Amino acid sequence: MSSLKNKNIIVTGASGGIGNAIVEKLYKEEANILATGTKIEKLEKLKSKFDNIKILKFDILQHEKIEEFINNATNELGGSLDCIVNNAGITKDNLTIRMNLDEWKKVIDINLTSTFLMCKYSIKKMLKNKAGKIINISSVVGHTGNVGQANYTASKAGIIAMSKSLSIEYAKKNININCISPGFISTAMTDQIDEKHKEAIIAKIPSNRLGRPEDIANAVIFLGSDQSDYINGETIHVNGGMYMG
Image (tube, rainbow, N blue to C red; front, side, top):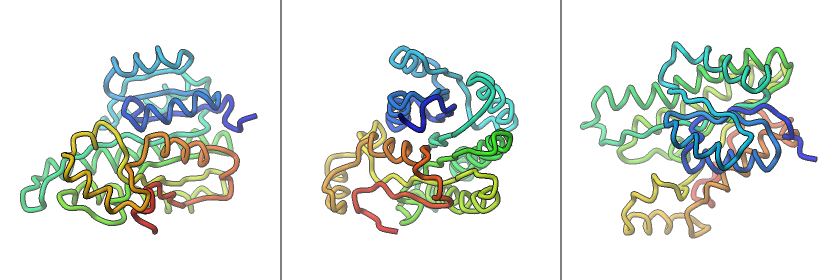
């Protein structure tokens, strides 16, 4: 029997390629899922595919409403929260000297500040359960840096450091907080990369291919399960050997 069966789990950024794969894997594990994102038509499509999941449209940039969202989502799931997967994020790439303050601030606000607030209010729910799992999705470039992504890399590196601090604070409360750092994953975002650039990326990956969304979802299943109970403040790298931290 899966240790995720009947667990109440929130997945943000659920309608994207990685989010979709996470929802599908959790569904197969018989978890109770609440999927959230900003595009209701994509959430409705997700619900039609996985009939018993809950959906809730929400923009995580609305910082003042995140506590209300967590309350509403927890109520939708039956009143308790076992796990949250903070997968939502954006990019606004530009070279540093061309990057304007809005491009910097929006990426930090959504990727880092929103993730912090989602963690904060989820922890409050988990303290009542005396247990919980938080899984924050970072990125390989949060470790390596990347051209044109000073904002994105800062936000993703910030998630890792923040998660370590939170894990220290709440480990004694039986709350595990960990990260997954995907490498280059085959999604709608990477589909936009021209073939020449994509070939150059793959040449740097020992596994000689882009990752699949399912590769990230598999790591989510592990970190959300009882098998990861003694893992805290860690980052699992899922990048085909491109970076070994």
